[in-house]
Length: 288
Image (tube, rainbow, N blue to C red; front, side):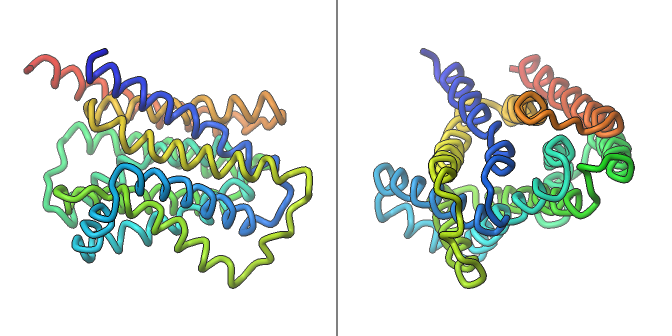
């Protein structure tokens, strides 16, 4: 098996594992921050074991030596778990995943601001089209009972936080930030512990809680490993699969209809980003 094919398969599996994330949040009957606590703790422990097995102590030493970049990365990753759960519990799943698809736009802005990287004209056009799509999603939140601007704002925060974390990784290219993932997740869980009663979960839901955390931990590992063997455009395209499959899964299982504005706005966002990534992928292969 070639390295490229291996990267594709690993990344696809990582994306497929993260697709049920929203569904788990919907199915577990507990306070949002309780769900976020167990999601962070279990996935953090899972990734910690993987890191200890493959990186050892040196991996953690490298992250500590990275200084401010690793601290920013861990803090942003830690904040995404409670923010994601709050987004899912306050608006439709479709709204959340369509908004999260806009993450490359924020990453481009941060790269310009903090790393001094230029923004290409095609990306400016893409950003404008994505803004139109997000506007339609926001408008749709006023017309559908299951959607709310509160959840949309939390989803935007998650998108911004992930983009910021990606920028922190790129600012310290010589260091693998994988060991920082469990530090962020477990650290975030410890902070949440001061504000919740973690065992207020229905007995029949504990299997869902364990599955949820384990699957997110496995997905985090795969989505960190897979992109090492394929281009960033291919990674971006594959990750867009979640934006398509997650709402379909929740719609099929729970009958959650996000409304026509969310669907139309989401199609605009995904189409714009897909064209941008396909164009970059075409140029990459053309000049190889």
